[in-house]
Amino acid sequence: MDSRKISLLLPSAYRSRSLREAIEAALNSTDMPLEICVSIVNDDPESAIAVRDFPIVLDVRSVAEYGRGAVYAWNKLFQRSTGDIVALWADDLRPEHGWLTHALDALDKIGGHGLVGLNDLSSDGNEYAAHWLADRAFIENELGGVMYPPQYHGWWADREVTDIAKALGCYRWARRALVEHLNYSFGKSKFDRTYRDAAQHYDADRQTYIQRKANGFAHDWNDHESAAVLSAESETASPVAQNRRKHPKTSVD
Image (cartoon, rainbow, N blue to C red; front, side, top):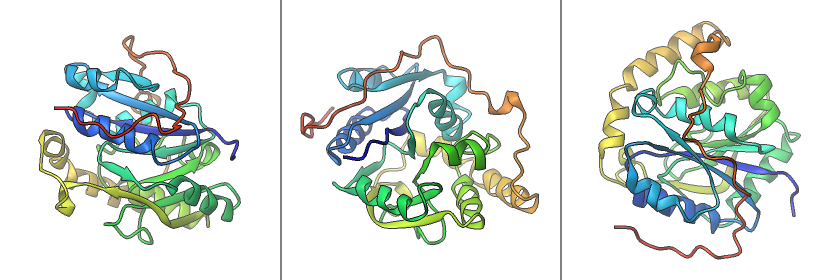
């Protein structure tokens, strides 16, 4: 079995059922141990109940932090994670069994250093990676130590990191690493509160991408912008989750 430690970064808000299903799906998609790092909002007790029986690394962010978007949450979870390989995840992803093996194989084909786009069955992974995994050294050295630049809220940043990886010759789309994206924009889910809150930032994030591309995607954020302060409510790291088929699908009303 591959000895590399794998971390999945999974921010969520106000979607307790989807969050539980996402964690179960991730656990049941591989026989490899996973460090699943989850972030929920402190005024969302249903999500806290939904995750309490899982062996996860739990972070609790404030409502104000939620307002800073998914990028802030991913960056905060990256600080909590300890994996050699880090995957950018979401509560509307449903992976097929074996996705991780295919993704790691793709990473190995580019020398074990770079960014691998996952096949979400909707977006074009040759163009950009909506969801991806990378080795920790790539994130630290090539992306400036963040999953996404903190100037973004939740959109278009995936194009930036893909552009960076392509320019460095270390991007690969793992077509067989299937992780279906049940996003509303693909007609696969309802346009709920979380999507609605994020959608209002689409145009601003697009402009951020255009401006940052023109400036060569500089690592020009300051320490305050990039710092995701760990909340006193954050739990200490839990052991990595072993699958062993102990997490059959369940429903949460």
